[in-house]
Length: 297
Image (cartoon, rainbow, N blue to C red; front, side):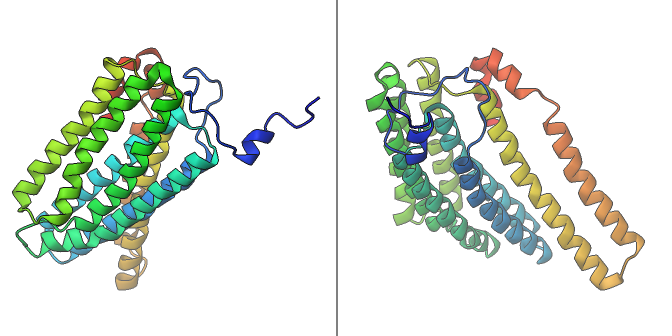
């Protein structure tokens, strides 16, 4: 008789078949690995916010807004694909963990490339220097393609959907790599990014609506998005502290300092309150077909 506890296999993290999680699994929640993965995005958001603040302080308002918008989109886009995949196929074995670590490295490379991107926009260069950011994407996407191919092999019932995801990412990957070796103008870069994003968008649309879809968990993915939103809102807290410190250092504890504290905290709290008004988990559970509108907006 096997006397090992039922979770012994999970503790050893032996390779397990990627057969897909139960989309109706009870008490499904974010895993420690997913939370660790999100920490890399804390660093990315922090660098983006810092560079935005620097641009504004220098009077480069347009460049700061464009750079921060570009950075925020890149950060969110890097996070989305992994999170939906993990909701459907998180085996938590050593292969999944090592591949996730590889993707985390890609996020950090992307974060390191943010200052160069901001500087190229602020200095009015003819092209956006996003080569390091794209390299980060390449690292992440290679790991993501491996994950989808593994799921396709080990989950025959959803093989077509998994291969569609892998194909869309691979095709877009060629375009991302091309941006490393060629210096395109800002206009061309934006057009290419839009095309590559549309290609990557086409993968989930085809996979989920035509090819049978994947077993993502509505309550789990809603929680993941909520945690990611809190990471972004955390920059509001950091920014409030930074602004308050500057005011206090210059003027001491004055009415201006109090207003900065109230405004910064109130804005962040208000955004958090509004985000959680919508019962996303219940809606997604009942209407899985609405995942695209919700997930990408």
